[in-house]
Length: 104
Image 1 (cartoon, rainbow, N blue to C red):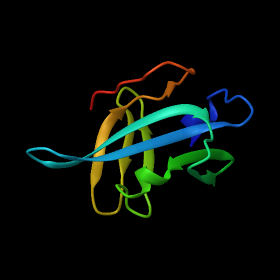
Image 2: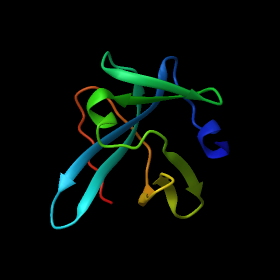
Image 3: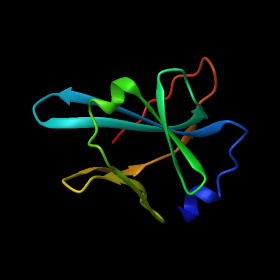
């Protein structure tokens, strides 16, 4: 949480966690992190003063509890008690009308 506390969130902003099950050669969940404001379909979770927004559709692809860890030089790691979803996630600020793509 120390790294997240360094972010200058504007009023009403938080971290959006987008997740989508991808049925390719391997079973995987594609995840993106964005800084933006809450949307109508989001579920909001507040952890140590930081808001996390998860769209209803993304809840279908995530376990009930996930962890967001930060390692300097490696970025954010997203995991659950059962699996690691990925490393080297970057937080991006989303602007209206701008599309953000992430590689994992």
